Image (cartoon, rainbow, N blue to C red; front, side, top):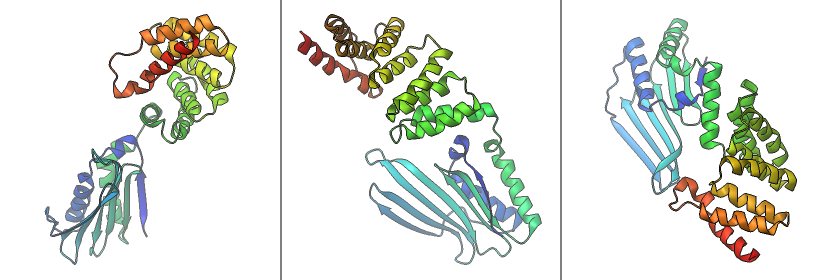
Length: 302
């Protein structure tokens, strides 16, 4: 009967692809007394430019050995960075054991096995857990840290939906954590759900009243919700904590303009222009784009 063990954690997804082949090879040599060569005898490759790379190799003979199969979907055609990959090693032709070990960037480690020999299965599973147990046992803190890391790096995917999914898991573990509430609020805002964004960003501000990032994002959601009184009050608090923050000054000017406070709007548009970054890194392209908007708004008000 086929059985499957899955370990889907950030650590598991970072296991080297070669470890899949090495493990299956070790199992066959240790428990089945089958010698597996390190060099593939037959190699078949199939490539489609920028779409996917499909590669198949055979280790052993045509009768028994290991089938290696990999799949890569490219994220960037210029740098060849894979956005998704899987590597599988599957035994074939072994009388008393079938084993398949897959490493996936999305699903982590997947060990499948089939054998009528229960003692052999126990040995295989025991060896697997011994070699990869560090991928299995996670404390609540480790799970939480992994969620925060992923929401920080990938939370904006699918217009914030991925961040919402991860953030909701994080606040179930630690509902009073600043970062969990902050990233969840930002993800809701990115998805256009500003009522929910305000709810979670208020909790983030409660945890850290001096976080200008939380105040800034909260004020933006107030602005998007046409709650201009709240937006002005909150953005002013953010500006007091980060007087030279280009984006904060820009949005403060926008709020004042929408409230008909022309002089205050002009003042903060000027500050936004003065505080605009001189050199722009890839991470700050969004903030620097306010520069031209601030110049155009100031010209219109003058």
